[in-house]
Length: 101
Image (cartoon, rainbow, N blue to C red; front, side):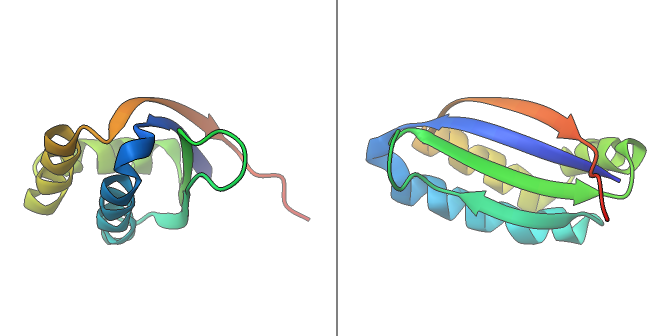
């Protein structure tokens, strides 16, 4: 199992647009066999940092999702929405493995 952690720097004046973008991706990750653990939007503290976590059974299944997402119309619409609204300034992607009881 591998969890993808995304740390976004967002435009705080476009929080509504980023939230709409986030709502697009949750069902798309699930559609491709992942489990989305949610987006986390700014509340207290920094107003330009958002996070997302989602899990795939393996790094190989995550890589397949990434490849397939570039050929999926709904994923392409989400990519284009982020580009058009410019709600995302930058992002970092890291991968983690869980330690379970």
